Image (cartoon, rainbow, N blue to C red):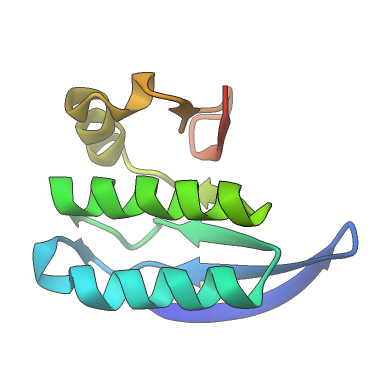
Length: 115
């Protein structure tokens, strides 16, 4: 996982975060640290899943925890290049129907936002 470019979109500080191949319990601490750091330093972050290949439930929990934290802080998380496997895991975990939607009308992009 690495931090990438900082953009100014609509006068907001936005950072894009390229997530690694393995988003599992084995990397949970690093992922959590990265998400917390980026949320504390930016008004908006983009999570890019282009290189991601492996997911588990712990990552889904981290993702939705980050979403809740961003909501409390008045910040935004956007996702790009979400893989079908992750969409399926989110749906199967029951998170897609809680208070947030991961899906947009675009196949490869979504915004995590309150319904």
